[in-house]
Length: 479
Image (cartoon, helix red, strand yellow):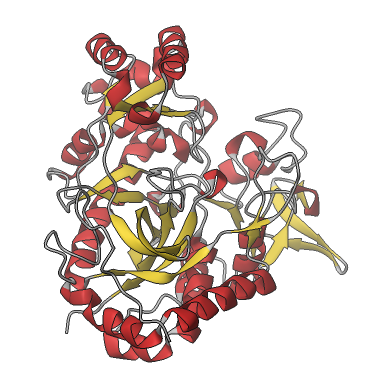
């Protein structure tokens, strides 16, 4: 059986999660490296093939809206896990807890007293120009004053080995089902390693999710539903999976009806009152009486029932104001303002194109920067300067000048790399990290995350819609 060798593996030039700059295996990867040494290539390739088949049998697929073929794809799971030392994870937990508490205080302030604007911590026009700021939410006080109950914060590790927050996802963050199913598959692949490495469990995420949802209402034995746009949504697998795991009903907007500002689910036994809605429908489509009139995905009267406190919406409408990419640049100030603390996990340096000095710098250095639409997601609306052509750069310069408020820029950061089985060998591929945070009566961070990996050589784009894959993320206990 051919032995697995890392002799040709290139670890220099990037921060590698498994090997240090001298090519030595990092301590938390040593036991896994020994297991690979015993496996051999034939067995490793067999296990990867089995993993691919397991994903298909579980229905772990998604749609890409830009793909006119309408083909469902699996989010490729690379069999080599990403392993995170327990001390690193404890640091991330502290930083993410700080961040989500401050962001929720910020959102609550924006829709009520607006002290942050009066004290000029961030520009008033920045919020006024944010599409995700919903005036309809003014004066609302959600249960426990929590707006974003489920957050997926994207982190990266730079050349210096330090973690940075790349962006916040406070509206309808996706991917947690892949984190959970990836773990189930990898536990069957390397069962003995989980016990020896003391990998922290993630299986109880859906229990914590259900508990958090129920904590938001005083109703005993609360009726909880998951609101999905339907089977054609790219994340439908996740919607169905979470509903099934929580023992909640999966509903579409047409399955709900509002009578006297009370939300009911239409069932074969008649109408059943709904207390909590975990919604995976964007704000604009929630209620055609308030937002988009042409929406077929929401329920008429839903928002008014929410305003009157007769139903809980998770996440709350309007939370997207805090994950606008232009607002992101001010989050260190926001943390300091509300908590009186320096931010624990720093942001990536961000240039706001609506500010004249930043705009000038971005245009002059566009070939060195990553340009992002402030309301973009999924890897769309981006320009990676060092990998772009002069023509592409000129197109983006015109776009930025036409609407500066819609763009920010960041320096190109070489994301850390993790050994990945690709092209018949093991090569370093760039990764990011999306931990999931639950916030109800308290903050709970699941000790695992969705690691997204750029499967294409030298690519920095990890999004599934752009050809990225995933890895199971093993967080180790400190023992």
